[in-house]
Image (cartoon, rainbow, N blue to C red):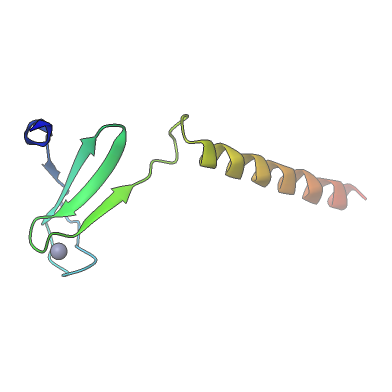
Length: 78
Ligand SMILES: [Zn+2]
């Protein structure tokens, strides 16, 4: 029912990783998630946006990267 209202946009030049067809990939939003789907073979994949502030996993990863960077700086200063 609600899926019929979802706007799907074709991604120009996108190649399906399953069937290899070009210009068959559509991009659309469902709830808070981003999906890409191949209209040729039915391939479907979730697109994770790294810039999403609500993604806790991304926050954790960034924190770990910052810690690693700080360690490197300390080693360089020594
Ligand atoms: Zn495909």
